Length: 400
Image 1 (tube, rainbow, N blue to C red):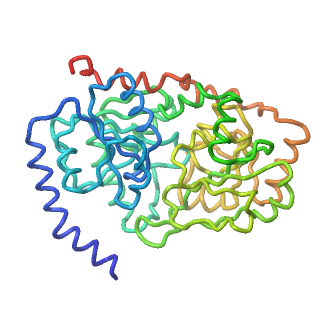
Image 2 (image 1 turned 90 degrees about the horizontal axis):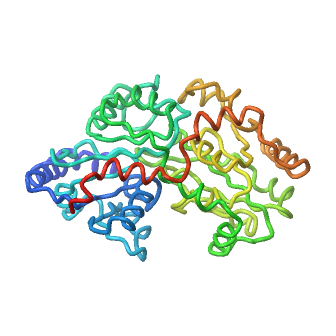
Image 3 (image 1 turned 60 degrees about the vertical axis):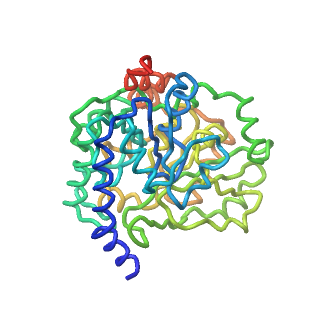
């Protein structure tokens, strides 16, 4: 009841005030060298916006850059030599209204009016396996209906001036699912440049030392997605950890450790106390590319992480204990996942362990279908995606 009351007050009183303030500030002269970045609703300093920010900071220091930071996640921006502003604060509204560029990887609140002078770069955050936006048959998320979800998504996508696509496959889906009619940048993902440039033992060793991980153990990364229908309330999702860590510890701890990276929407924290020294919670670790680089093997489900991880050409195991429900009821897939996934699909922890032991015994060999998979999804990832995006979008940089 309290949450419903807060939501009602925001909609009736606060949002109209914010909208008016935004509208008025948006009439002021634009600051052509001002950019505001946001990643996952201000919760992280990460992903494609981070890669673009760091490239601009290094090559074009005349730009003034701010990060939008959610009030509950300000700790993720402190001590990083960043200019950040609390999301939805008066200063945030003023900077957003004056900025020439918005760069984000997820949707902004619908009530925000985009000024005419603003160039909105939507980077998005993954190659789609699961159906998106208007391609979804039903929406099971809290606080919305299928009709409203699709209508709101189309309205927000109408504000985007540029949308980054990692490959031609995604371009086709994004155009249709988002009903996006403006400029598509088919460049590969900026966040993946580091996977090309830093895929070497020396860099991996530095990361393991930095995060206190044992150098003599192989690393398993478990990175599942969220389930639309598992939630506490709007914006707070839960996740049942079906992977039996106790069983894995018994079978694998002599040679492996497990790092867990849960989806940013999942609400609860993991209790890994019983598995100390074997399982590590990296759910709040912002830069997942570092976790890709230090891991020898990925376990996932329907998360788009496997498209990025494939760049490294390392083993992937798909732990899909609920595949019938997810495929047929919750989301649906864009291609025959069960036939074309670049790794084995398993439904129990015992099967996960068996696949890991097979790799340990016989070594890892790329699946026969991997070449076609790589050519379709990873062909643009050559370490220059960020440069391509910046040189296309920020055309006025030479005039600053």
